[in-house]
Image (cartoon, rainbow, N blue to C red; front, side, top):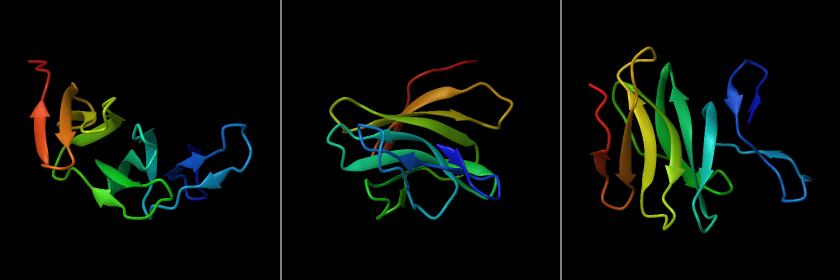
Length: 117
């Protein structure tokens, strides 16, 4: 992760040996990447305006797809070990508690796993 010229966050990728740094071009400010177990997809936090949502893309940055929408801050995506679900944290606003959810990209089912209140 790095900061772009306007202060926006960017995802940078490297080869295993640390060479070949390149920016992942997804078209929006992005951070907190998580690779799918097979390495073909990347889940990340992206911002459209001031709202953080969860997106996925191909490992080369193509085929960007929003997974979440609506109000509330969604961050920290992590693929399940089998790659069928993505866990993420969600809060009503940036100052509130966070809950953990899972999202199934195939069915678009979203399940809340924790309750803070």
